Length: 361
Image (cartoon, rainbow, N blue to C red; front, side, top):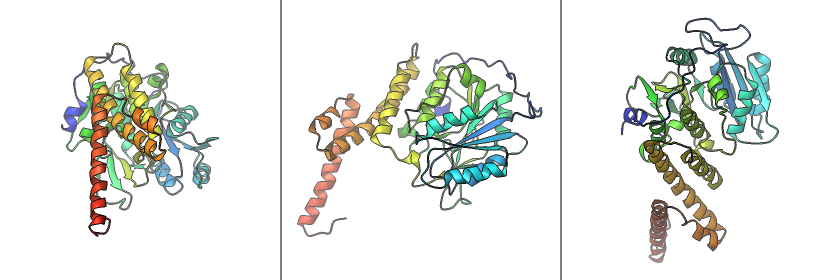
C-alpha cells in the first residue's frame, strides 16, 4: 500500500469539529504575531540523557524564521548534564525555559509539563535528539491557518546519527503527497508495522497542534505510556473531531540512533500500548472501518507484547504466567507458537552443530 492510500483511507468517522477559524489570540494568515508578549508557537522538548544533542535541538527551534517561538525544555530527571545544558541555553536566550521533573516519569509526562509551562496558541513537539530546518514552523503555521487545521503535520526526514549531513529518507511516503486529510482509519492504518515497519509509522510525526482544540477536548499525552503516547494522543484527537492534515517534508529531521528510547520496547511499555488500543476500541459509536483497523493494530501489538511476556515468564521459570500468555486471540496464539517453533529450530540447529564439532555462531 502506498503512503497516499494509507493516509487517505475513507472511513465513516466522527464528523470533524470546526474550530471556527482563528481563535482569540491567534493572528490571521500573514499577520504579525498576535501579541508582542505571546509567541506564535511553543516548541516542547522532553529531554532525558540528552546533554550531547539538546543544544542542537534548541538552536534549531530558535532559528525558525518569520515566526515567534518559545522553547520549553523539560528534563526528565536525567543522570547526565541535561539540565545544566538546558539552563545554560535559557540563560543565553529568554525564549528558552528550562524545567526539571522531580522524578523520572517518561516523555508523556514531560511533554504535558511543557504544555502547561507554555503560552503560545500552537504547540509543536520536538525530540531532544532531532532538529528542524529554519523555515519549517512558519510553513506549517501558514498551512494550518489556510486550511483551519487543528493538527498540521509534515512527513519527517530521517538521517543516521553517524552522518548527520548525509542522505535523508522520508519517514512515511515514498512519493510526493501534497496535502492529505487524515481520518482515524487512515492514521491507524499508517501505524501498522506490517505496512510501515522499520520505524516508518505515522505515530512518529510531530504536528503543529492547536492549543484551543486540546483544551476544548481535555487532551493531553497519556502519562501511563512510555511507548506510542504520540499515536494515542493523535488517535484520540481524531476521535474528538480534529481536522488533521499531512503534507510533504518541511524540515523536521529525525536522527536515527541505535540507542533511541523509541526503539526499545519492553513488556510494560507494550502492555500500556495494548491497553490504549483497548480504550480506543471502547469508544462509543465507533465506525466499523475504524474498529477493524484499530483491532488490527491491537493484534499486532499483542503479538509483540505476548512474546515479551513469554520470555519474561521463561526467565522467571513461572509456568503459570507462561501458560497465561496463551490466553489471547487466536492470531496472537499462532504467532507465539510460530516463534516458539522458530526458536526451537534455531536452538536445535546450534545443538546439532556442537555435536558435529562445528563452532557455535
